[in-house]
Image (cartoon, rainbow, N blue to C red):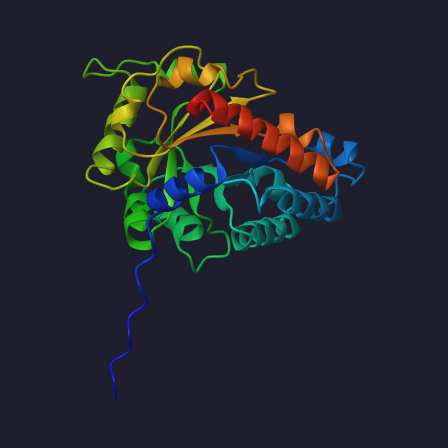
Length: 287
């Protein structure tokens, strides 16, 4: 009997996101079914309204926008029916060609972190997208199960470094025993994890576009940078160079409410997202 032919290794998330940004342009649109949005769209703050909202967003964005980012909490609040809608959203958006970052911000220690890695980074799991956001504030080393899953499965993680909320500074700017900030320690650890990867590593960072100052050292990370905060949180495309400098390889600016307010019309939503993408691309690449 002939030996079974092994399946080809999955292309790394870093390679996939590099290609998607080049093909579709540098933008991530958040799928954030706030109560107010569900009601303003006329869908109602119910599981059925959530399902209609998710289907509208996928129809509007998944075939054109490089990266979609469903915020898990807005689905979780509906219990099992909400999780079912999240599973459908991840799978259907990916089938249409978008990369999906599940915005769950998971982080813990030991076997619990290993379970999170299985839930969000193992392609056999219903909640697995292309990447998940994670919190390193139990120590970067506690993310080891997620880092191992990234290497094993070709998925990716985005580690919180400098977040867009003002409260984050009290932790992220704190200085440790080695005389460097917590944020810089996280940046250095991500850089080490991505060393030697081409064209990008799969360990990304989350750095808010609203931080208001240039964040040093990001060019050395060699991984994607998720930059939330465009629109309702106050950042504009013009802020991107101020925060991220001139080396914008792998930068993924993210917007949510500023695009979603144009719903529920699919064409209006898609047009708003494409305008934002083109504005971002013009700032980043001059075209």
